[in-house]
Amino acid sequence: MWTGTINFNNRIGPQHLHMAVRLSAEFKDPVPGQFVMIRPNGGGGPLLSRPLSVYQYVRNHDHVILELLYRVVGQGTELLSQLTKAAEVNILGPLGRGFRIDKTRSHRILLAGGMGVAPITFLADYLKGRVAGKYELKICLGAKSCTEIVGIERIRGMQGLLNIATDDGSMGSCGLVTDLLPSFTQGCDPGKTMIFACGPMAMLKTLVEQLAPTGIPCQVSIEERMACGVGACLGCAVTVHDRRGKRVQKSVCKDGPVFNIEDICWDQIR
Image 1 (tube, one colour):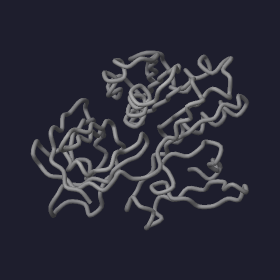
Image 2 (cartoon, rainbow, N blue to C red; image 1 turned 180 degrees about the vertical axis):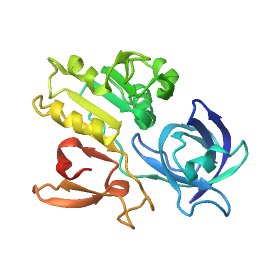
Image 3 (cartoon, rainbow, N blue to C red; image 1 turned 30 degrees about the vertical axis):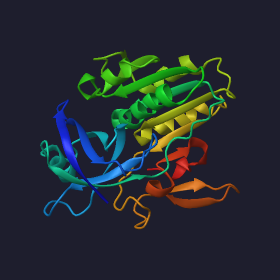
Image 4 (tube, rainbow, N blue to C red; image 1 turned 90 degrees about the vertical axis):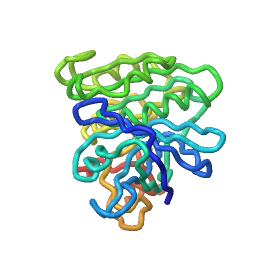
């Protein structure tokens, strides 16, 4: 467990905030798709920490800066939203299994629905700055309306094609973010393409149907309620196929949150 100090905790939307936390230089570098468990330092409030995906990460000489993007959805995140500069937070992490980068797949398509923008933005930045070689990058963001599209300023500054879809058409195309995918996958070489996605389960289920006939591999980061963050409580179990095709239970926090889309038993997902 680490104790960090808040650099800023800015509201960027009606229910969305962008937090930066200063931590010891001993904090381990996260990879895209990993998350942390965070809670205010000290007593009071909910017992359990809240899982938040890493949005950005910067290592300096004597400290690191961890950035988090989150939405207020309950008492825990409401308490986080009230924290001000210099307040202390307790952080456990980085946790989980992140996205795996196959350098032989030069065509990369990133899809984010809702708060999936946080890990997808970190992944896009990681691919831009730390993965050598020529590659083609396309990024698709989706949300219910323009008021829920957050964090796009950072993505717009990256090399890559950004496309936006909103349910009500208030920004970008009118429709679901998955509606954008067919135009990008048509004619793609499955052996050179990889799709990375994070968003609501309904969005990921749609991806399963869309990608089945294409043969294009996809890694998905699952959004799930978590209690401990380390697989001890079994509160975030998901059914997957193991290497022998047998159905087994895995913890989203420990074995994920990133899985190959074909490994998940989608008929067991609510």
